[in-house]
Length: 443
Image: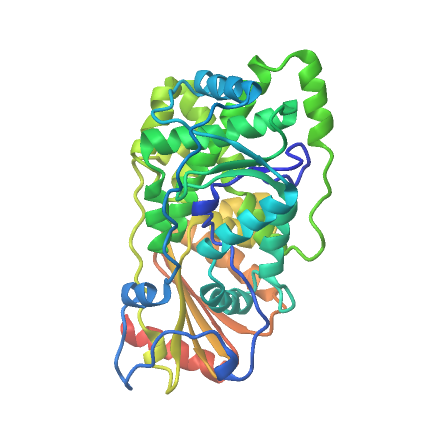
């Protein structure tokens, strides 16, 4: 997906809509009547515990992917055909099958984006997640994340490649301007990636709700497409084209105040961080090294943020016990989420300075949160594992500062045991005490 206004400081880099799964959630106001809430996990018999993997499988429900659509076999407009060839040259790959970019209107783009977002972000699943995020405090009580993601997508995106249908669309004409040409190069790079490396694997990760792994894989795909853009601008555009490109790039408005900052920052993550990751690979090993990253995708966002750990520092599996079965009757699974270094860094930076947030999140070695709901009240337990006790201590200390500055109304507790740090959130202190007792009984 390609954004409008790439030169703006807030600019979104572009995403593959069919796999647009970066942890952003679609929100709704917290309901007080449980019947009005999105359906949580199934009710359990008293005392029956459910593993986090089973809960995730139950809660992770998305519509099936669309089937590939027949491609128009007619000839491409001459200008577009030239850009297809240039994209092959820039990316040093050749198309195995024809791809036909389609110029569409802004109105049609909005319709296409809405369709794709509903597949990646089904409202029922995302309404559950938004309750957990509000309880943790990464979004405000009045934030509407659905409005945030829809606003970002409908106003900023000017092109995307759909890994399911194999369609490539962009806002423009059959005689693209320099800005539109770079959009096409970005999206054609995604089409090349799909044909050579099967981006359907990202759809599979999304379908399994492998949250941090999806975000890391997206960083490779988007970083590669951004690298193609930079190469195209620097090697193909004439000075006059470049001037026009710059003028077009800045013709955009910043996001509205309705866009939650956490949503914006997490949505943006794969583009600059992915570009840094891919640039580093290319500098050391050229495109063979970049291609290798598609063949062996990073296992976590930690490996994207710290490229020296790529292929070496595998994250630990974290399985949060079913505390909901132990804290009283009526609690049901609400959400399970992989908490990676990128998620933690983005969350901490909401209230801490960027350098402190980065230091506190570095050393992550695995994480997961699990949330439960009962009559509109939400409890969350987040467990993280760290490379050393010192790094765990630093995260726990900074997380304590972060929690103390929260105004979300939940009460919280932070515990550290060796290289493990657990954070609990509850609607009131009695529930927090029960949650803590339940956690201790499982260790």
